[in-house]
Length: 270
Image (cartoon, rainbow, N blue to C red):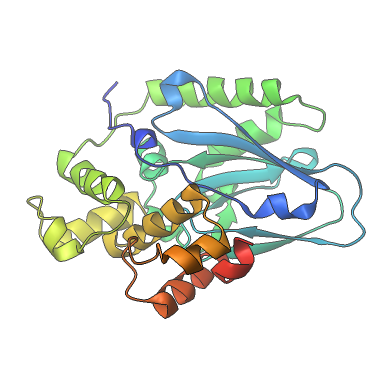
């Protein structure tokens, strides 16, 4: 098996919005097996603890990842969601039990030879994209599975698939990713990513393997690193850390944060 750089060492995508539901909705992440960790950030489960009094609006913030997801009691209806350039909201019922797989940037196209840009800012029935994977989910996942059983099913399936897959390992693509991630998204694409590729070649590779341009991906990485540092709204105002994160001014920061998160930083981080 050919290897690719372990992006996990440099990037930790955060999905923070569920914690605001006062324990009525539980979100958990499971670590994949060791052989899969360069490709899969986590397996996840989003479920109600009891019936809610009203429908739940689930907001997914931009994280540069591609996800497979479905409800355990309706596993035949499974989906893939591409890289998002802004937040996305899903209206859910008053009870639900979703599970999913979050692939690290470049991993989904590597494993399945799918052009990531064809999924950007949208979700599709998985059957139309990966019919074999969709069939596996329909035949093996059901209500009542324990988290350990969910993890075992995913690990066995993806390990088997990986063993039969030839990976694309152009060092220039991964050098560009490394520069962006090590600099926490604060890069000037034309100057910082001088890696032996023309701007056209670089864009083509990023669109296929990441889903969008290097510039858009850098914005998402910059935003995600602010979330990872978990600042308070007060510290943002007092210390103005958005300057260190490469934003021109506070207005620029607030506008971009709201696009990627769905709320202003003062409300999201209160």
